[in-house]
Image 1: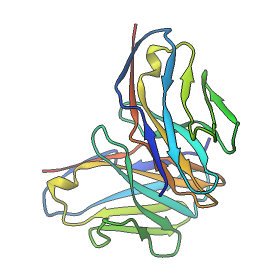
Image 2: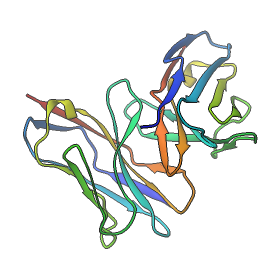
Image 3: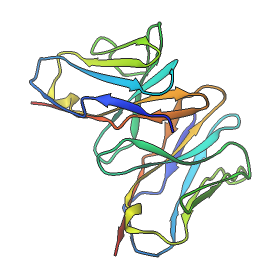
Length: 112
Length: 113
């Protein structure tokens, strides 16, 4: 079946450090891939997405590239800020059906 | 961007009572809404898919008689937790489909005492 695997957190970084959160997936067909962010006490917000192989999604300094050969969609940011502290969810969606399948989430804590 | 609201944001109820949670798409019509449950430090678990004017489709293991879903209009879906018990305490999140995107509500924290 379809599934998403994320690196376990928490990830703790100092401000301005480089961030990578790994995400791999298993899916039939050609899924669309997403990163969502959840700030404390809030719902999920779409951070970025990619709909086909080799696409790069980017937003707010975050990037992720859809790698079909490694079935990965790793999230990166060159210089994190304290305000990036949140939980990050990788997700996939297959076909025309809107059902999202989420990874377990990775908590990021950025310290000054 | 599209906005989805949930009401209430927090609710405390006594064991055995029922509680209703509303999910509204504020500036778009949503033919499909989803209800998720999120356990502490865990991912979102899809509970059901709600289509306007038809019965909800529940995921395996979710009790349809306990979690009643009504999608009466293109902008409103409700989740009623019936005969709530402490183990139903959780963070409930809805989402609504607008075009190709899924927009999430801010969530409802349910505490059953």
